[in-house]
Amino acid sequence: MRAFVFLLVAANLVFFAWANGYFGESTNPDAIRLQQQLAADKLHVLAKEEPPPLPKAPERKPPAERCVAWDGLAAADADSIDAALAEQFAALRRERHTLPEVASWWVFIPPQPNKAEAEKKAGELKRLGVPEYYVVQDAGPNRWAISLGIFSSEQASKERLEAVRGKGVKTAKQARRGVSRPEQIVVEVTGPEAMTEAAREAVARSWPDAKPTACGKR
Image (tube, rainbow, N blue to C red; front, side, top):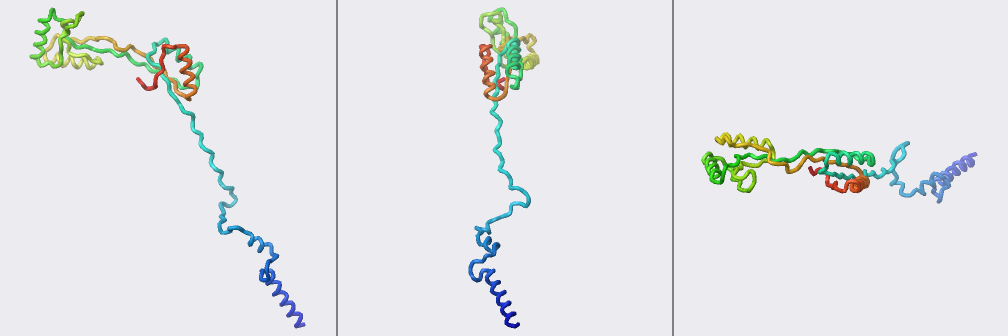
């Protein structure tokens, strides 16, 4: 009986040693899989029960935009061009601006009878301390007038008139001298380059006198 128990214990020891690979390769499937792992220390768990993040799709840039303007338009032409653009190129953004007329204003002393009288009046201005004046000698209705300044705004001419009158020049006057630019209308369109170019070509065919220009030049 003792011999049988001894043999049973010895057999268990031999099986244990064989199962743990002490006698060479083991048939233990778990042991074999462990031996077949490659760079197991470099494996990392990203997340539990969650798929790895998908790569982001590249962002699409909006198409390049362009702005085209037509300035110096009379009201009738501006209306026609604006209506045509609205009908044929509704996707474009349209804007319309009105440029006011540009006029000049003159502060002066009315024409004197002759050169001698004009020079006499100029001498009086000098004694009164009035700066910046000259005698108009060009032929025409204003010959022998004395100019006290030409201004681009009515307000500036009023200020000059008040200043010279304050020095005692009672005969000084103010008048609108002329219009250097009449009132004009500007039509602008903004949108994708291809569409604005098509709009420019369409306007050029129907209104050849309407010249395109860069936007914002007002």
